[in-house]
Length: 301
Image 1: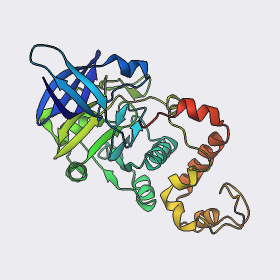
Image 2 (image 1 turned 180 degrees about the vertical axis):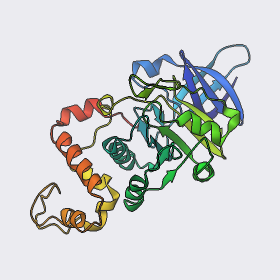
Image 3 (image 1 turned 60 degrees about the vertical axis):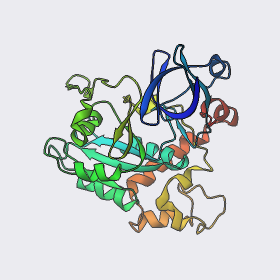
Image 4 (image 1 turned 90 degrees about the horizontal axis):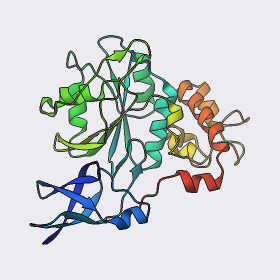
């Protein structure tokens, strides 16, 4: 019997696959986690007991620096928000909500625009670069931009997320063909892809780890992550130079007179589409009660 520390790479059917010193062990989680309402996640650092004649067990989950509910992963350094330029079409509000969630959790967001060979979207690329985010134009078919994304993965624990059918698995296969992740065609009727990734799993890629995660089909499904109205302005990094310059200290930067953020939008210093998303998210944040935050926000135990 040996005790060691390792990282969960994936969990399937109640079994967790933990990497310890370069080897992967199948483990079961102790029942106390279920009792405490704490589920081990891909990315978790854990303490395990390794047996030669009995079942390996996860004894403890070490403190997490962050948790994402969807995709369900922990301890992420970078979140790559993968967006197709067509089929399915990009929805800025979805991108902006995900960037805000990442910033709130201390995760560095990047935006990857796929299918660039089918429909370039220079205006969107410029918008997010202006907002201060790393943004990539990629074609997994031609190879354009793939090496840039690969370089950004170096030494990090990253997650890829985005709508089903945007090409997350295809891009990862282009970055590392040995992964051989399953892909599927877009449904002509629904205009979106079938789910080909059924669980969150960390793959060793480019000297780090990448989580290829189940996609989602609409913003309405993303209800587990909560941002308070007081926190929201801080989740838009391009607002930072203008915060504190408003006429009123209670300014929410929506439509108030003397708002420094609005002035920056009018001057073209903040992308207008980003501010429109901010206003939508602010209206949603105003409706959230404190008791809802306690029940909906995942803990970072």
